Every structure is written in structure tokens, then in C-alpha cells.
Amino acid sequence: MGYEIQGNTGVWEIVVGLEVHAQVTSNAKLFSGAATAYGAAPNAQVSPVDAGMPGQLPVLNGYCVEQAVRTGLGLKAEINRESVFERKNYFYPDLPAGYQISQYAHPIVGKGELTLDMPDGTTRGIGITRLHLEMDAGKSLHNQQDDATLIDLNRSGVALMEIVSEPDIRTPEEAVLYMRKLRSILRYLGTCDGNMEEGSLRCDANVSVRKKGDAGFGTRCEIKNVNSMRFVARAIEYEARRQVELIEGGGTVDQETRLFDAQKGETRSMRSKEEAHDYRYFPDPDLLPVVLDEAFIERIAAGLPELPDAKKARYMEAYGLGPYDAGVLVADRTTGDYFEAVAAGRDGKQAANWVINDLFGSLGKAGIALENSPVGPAALGQLLDLLNAQTINGRTAKDVFALMFETGRDPDRIVEERGLRQVTDAGAIEAEVDRVIAANPGQVETYKKNPKVIGWFTGQVMKATGGKANPGGVQQILKAKLPPVEG
Amino acid sequence: MSLDKATVARIAALARIAVPESQQEALSGELSTIMGWIEQLNEVDTDNVEPLRAVMPIERHWRADEVTDGGAAEAITANAPKAHGAYFVVPKVVE
Image (cartoon, rainbow over all chains, first blue to last red; front, side, top):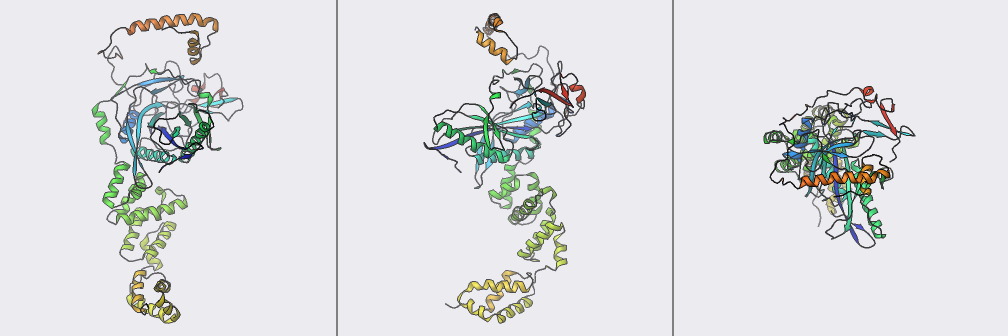
């Protein structure tokens, strides 16, 4: 899955690393007892600590530490037994203390790895550089008043995990796959809800370009505000092309922060952020180093759920699924649970096909989430039982599924009420076959030269039985009753 | 290590402290003296010495994940130079 940019002077490739800010799922903030719920009235969830009032002391929320460790373990990363909160100093109105409490030289989580599930069924590892805990800043509203900016500090102090990848990403699609996989793992772990619309998951992309085959890195730009799955690929594509055109035009790429403008589909320089890039980090004297003992880490490790990679391997092994189908089913915990309920005691591949193609297809078309599916796993399982017991044929099963999806009713009742049971009475089918052959001597002649016409006969018989015969059985009877094929 | 006037101006700008040019020369002398003192401390051999974080042993003190604060927007914005509704109001930030 190569991604190349054809320039005037040759072929270029892209080098991308992602910095993801994931909001920790917690009731209270990282250093205060104020609430974190989304959508509260302005400044309703602010403690004096979050407002940077003099004389206030931050106190670390232990649950947020647990969530960071949990996430680190989920990313197969080193957990640092000792980490340090530092002050990152800069002035901005939504940062009332004049510094953000973050981790710098000693993050809580070190190197890990995330596995991408490629569309062709292969996997590819992307390195995780680190994960650290930090507080969020407040929110600035620039468009409410012409001559002023309004500040809401509800978000100030909310716990974030900044998860930094190695520059291992080589295509815009890989960046999207990385984001999806990371979100999937976070949701399995329950450490971040992954909601990009509400800002619980935000992405900055470091993008550079180099001539294909070069080993060194070009100068990178940091693209901010890439806040939907759709924009991740678009922002990277635009930025890479911009850099190639700039370099080929005789210019050089400046290392700078750029903002992705989703409406225009372009990136532009954020000169305001350039001046203050000297953050003068130093250990926050208000906070002790975070020291973790083995028992603490072991307890969290013992409580980890089965994660997508392990579940995918199990689905391939236990149900005989291909890597692609298994990958689709494990993307969400709810999806996997649904599939396993359908597959229990049944053919796993068949269950996967119905869940992925029929159910997800219908849900997608109707814009309904799986949680609200009108067809539950028990009902879908019953439908497969009816099909496998040959009570109904394959065609009818699709129709019954459509009715189940429409009405939310059980397949048994739909089949009974509509009289959709397969006709298994061989005598009745034979009589119908005889009638169709007798009524169509011209088609019989055609069949002798072109045996494919048997499909037409099958169709006629199926029609006559209201679609309830078994098409395979009908063909067998037809073959026996039609004259032999010539030549 | 000595700090020149330009470095003093930059530190002042980063700290948002107005330092008129007339005072920069004097400040650069003072700050250079402080840096010299720190360099003197650096001469002490601290290999194999554990960093001391607190003079008294301090037990880990973590907060439970419970909402115990907030719900006081009026009090929070009460001392702000300017507020509008429950928001703080600051000079327009141009992005």
C-alpha cells in the first residue's frame, strides 16, 4: 500500500507521526474536584485550582493515573515506575495559571506498539513513543463578540493522555487506520470515550516529505486541529503536496505549526504560536513524583479486558474467519459481543457474513447504531437456525431478514404468518416441473442446445411455488425430467 | 556564564514582564551573577547521590475520582476585570 507523490523532480514519499490527545474518562478533573461532563453551562465546572487562583494547590486524581497505566498496558508499552509532572510555561487567555501541568522528561508511559489491520488482511506495527498525562486548557470563543474573546474554563484541568506515535506512518490511509485502531483500544479499555465531535479525541499530525528511497527526514510541520477521521487523511494529503510544491519551487519548509481549515481543505501557518515555543519546563514544585509500585500495576494488568488484537486472533482461530472479517467484528466491543451471541453453537463464518453484510449493511443504510438494532442477536440466530434446518431457503431468509429489520419481530412468527416455509413436498414440486416443461416446448428445444436455459426453468418453477421451493432441489428434478443435452 | 542584553530582553518577553532597555544592562549583570553562583553549585560532585525531593518523607496523597467542587460560576468570575454572563472576557485573540 504505497503512497507516492509524483513531483516534477521525482517521486516523493511522506513521513507522518501523530500526536493524539485523548480525554481520560473520569468524573473529576486531573488536579481538582470539579466535574468533567460535556456540555455544562459556562464556568459551571470550575474549581479555584482550574481558574489559576493564587494559593490553590493541585491534588492528583489517582483514578486518572490508573487510566493512563491501563492505556499504557493496552498499548503494550513500558510503564515507568516514576514519572514527574512539570510546568509548561506559556501565556494564553485560556490558560489562567500561565502554565500547563504536563509531563515532559519523565512521562508515565514509555515505548509501546500499535498494530494496524491493513485492508489486504496483513498487519503493520506502528511504534508508540510515549504517553503522558496533562491537564487540558480552557475554551476560547472568538466569534461571540466583535471586539473581545470569551473564556470558558470548564475544560481547564480535565485530564488528557497525550499519545505520541513514532514517525512510522507512510500513507494518509495508515494515519486513519492508526486513529481508528487507537480509538478502538481506548474504548475497549474504557479509558477514553473516543468521541471526536465532543473533542474527547483530538489529533495533531507531524508531516514531512522526502525523496523516495532517502533515509533521512525532511523538515516537518505540525498540523493542528485534525479533528475527524475524514480530515486526518485530507489534511495530510494537502500538507504533503504543499511541501513538495514548495521544495520543487526552490523554497524550503519551515518547521512551524499549521492549522487545518476543514472548510477550505487546506493548512495555513499559525504565526501566533511561533513566538512562544520556549516553554521552559521545570518540575512542578506543588506535585510529588508519581511513584508506582508493582502491586498497583499488576492489579490494573489483571483487570484488562480482551483487546482487539487478541480477540481478532481468537475469531480467526475459533470461528475460521478471515483477517478482514475478524478485524471488522472486533473494531467495537459491542460488535464483537453481538457476533459471538449469533455465532454461539452455529457456523461462525455464516454468522459473520450475516452480521457484516446483512445486518451492518441495513444498519448503515438506515443510519441506526448497533445498540438500537431492531434485530437482536437472538433473533438473527433463530433466522440462521431456520435456514440451516432448511425450513426456509436462502432467498426467503433474506426477505425474512428485511421484514425482521422493518418490524422488529421474530423470524419464526414471520415465517409462520406469511406461510414462507420451504416446499419440501417432492410430489408437489415434480408436478410443477412437469407443468412448466409441458407448457414450454420451445424452451425445451433451446435447452437441448444451451443447457444454461435450466436457470430459466428453475425461475419458472420457483415463481410457481411462490419462491418457497429449494432452488437446488428444483434443478435436480429439472435435470432428470428435461431431455438430454445434444452434442 | 554571562547573559547579554538580548537574552535578558527575551527572558522578559517570555515572562511578559516589561523591562525598559535602560534597565537591561543592570539586569544582565545581576542575572549573570546568579548564573555564576549556580555554576559554583554545579562543581559539587553529586554522582551517586539520590535527588532529595522533600526534607520530610511524604506519603502519596491522591484524590478520589469524586466531584467535590464547581457549580460556582459567579464566584469564579467575580474578580475578573470583565465578565459577560458566566464567561470571562479578554481582549480579542486573533487566530
